[in-house]
Length: 545
Ligand code: MG
Image 1: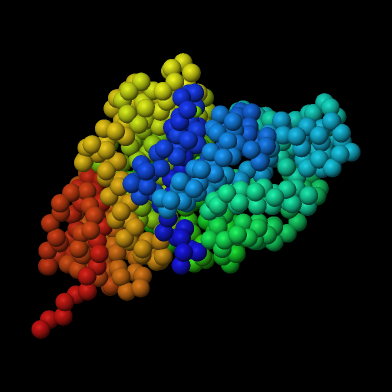
Image 2 (image 1 turned 135 degrees about the vertical axis):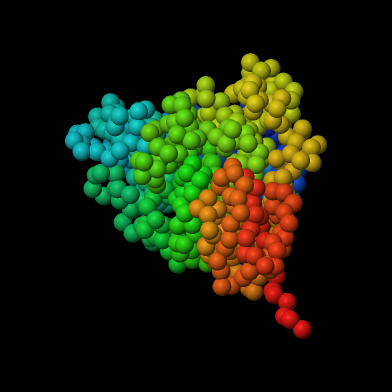
C-alpha cells in the first residue's frame, strides 16, 4: 500500500532559511539542509514539509511569492534543490513543498502587468473594485491590516487581499489562473517531490466579496488539482490548510478523491484546552468523531510555524488556554493565538513534554514535528509577530549554535543564546551524547510509533476511566489491540477502567514514562505518575486448563 504511505508517515516541518547554513553567508540553504539529512533520517522522520522557498521579497516568511519557478537565491539554486531531493530520496525521506496560490507578492510580474494595463489579461488574475465596498470580510491579520481592500493608484482601483496588503489575492475563479496553478504543480513534480501543502485552502476557494470570484465548482476544482498532482505518481499527495468548523471538513476529503490530508487544527485546539484544564473530555470528544475516508488522513501537530491558532475554541476556553500557556500579552497574537514554542509553554518540564508528545503520537492520524521541538527549543519574543518561533536550529553550543559559520552580525536571524532554552542549554550535539535526552526519547517514540500501525489505520475508542484528568483510548485493528493511558495532571493517580473488551491484566507495557508494576490480577486499577503515560499491547486472556 505504498500509495497510502502518508497514513503512517512521521512528518517534520522545516524552514530552510532557519535550519542550516551550508555556504557561510548567514542564511540557511538547501546545501545546509542536505548536509543534515542523516540527522533527520536517524531520528526516524519519513517526510519533510518544506516551508516556502520561492523567489520572494520575503516580507511574510516567503509566503509572498514573486516567481513560482525559481528559488529564493539566498537558499540556493534549482540545481541545489534537485540535488537535495535526490539525497533525501536515497535516505527514503519524502518531500512536500508549499503550494501558495491564494495570493502572490505585489512584486509578482502578473500583478505588475495587471496594474500597469487594466486591459491586460493579467488584470483579471486579481480581484478589483472601483469603489471600496462598505461591507467587508475580516482580514487574517487584525491589528496589522485594517481592511481587505487596498487602493492601487496605477490601476485606479482597489484590490482584494485577505492577508497582507503586499499579498494581492489571485482570482482563482479565473480559468487562466487555474491553468497557471496546474503548470506550477507540474513544474515541481518533475523534481520528484511527493506532494504539496496547499496554503490557505479555504480562502483559495471562497469568494472575495465581489461577483464571479468564487471558484464555481470547488469540488471539481480540488479533484482537478489532485489529478494534476498525481500525473506522475498515484502516491503524490495534497495536504491542505483548512481551519474550518468540523462540519465543513468532509468537503475537502470528499470520497478520498480530493485532498489526502488536512492539518488537524480542531484536535490541536482540544489538546491545549485539555492540557490547560487538565480534563481529558476535550480530547475524548474529538476521538468520538468519525474518521475521514480511509484513503485520507489527519496531520496531527502540537505546534506549527505560525501562531498556535485557538480559533476553534469559545472565548472562555481560549482565555483558559491563554492563562495557562501565554500569561503575558507579548506571548499572544491576533487575539486568537500564541506565538510560543512547545517547550517554554510547558516550562521546560520534561515529564510534561513527554506526556504531551506521547499523546500526540497516539492520536488517529500521522504526527508532525516542527524543527527544533525534538530537542525542546524555545522562542524569541523580541522578534516580531510569528517570527518568534523561527529562530535558527540549535545544533551545538558554539557561536551561532552551529547554524552558520558567518560572523554573528551577518546572520539573517540570531539564535537564542540566553536563558534556559539558549544554545548552551539546548542543542542537538549535547542531546545526541546523552541517552536520557529529549532527542533520544523522541527517537524511541518515533520507532515505537512505527510499530503501532493500529494508530494510523485503526479506529480509536475512548475507554471509560474513573478520573477526569486521565485519557484512556484504544485501537483495534486486524485483531491487534492497543490501549493508551495519559495523565494530564502533575499529580500521580490510580484509576480504574471499564471495558467489555479487555481487562488490565491482559496489558503488556510497550512504552511508558517509568517502570510500572503490571496491574494485579484482582483489580482493574491502573497507576500513573504525574504526567505519566503508558502504552499497552492487549494480550488475549489465557484460557484456563
Ligand atoms: Mg547560506
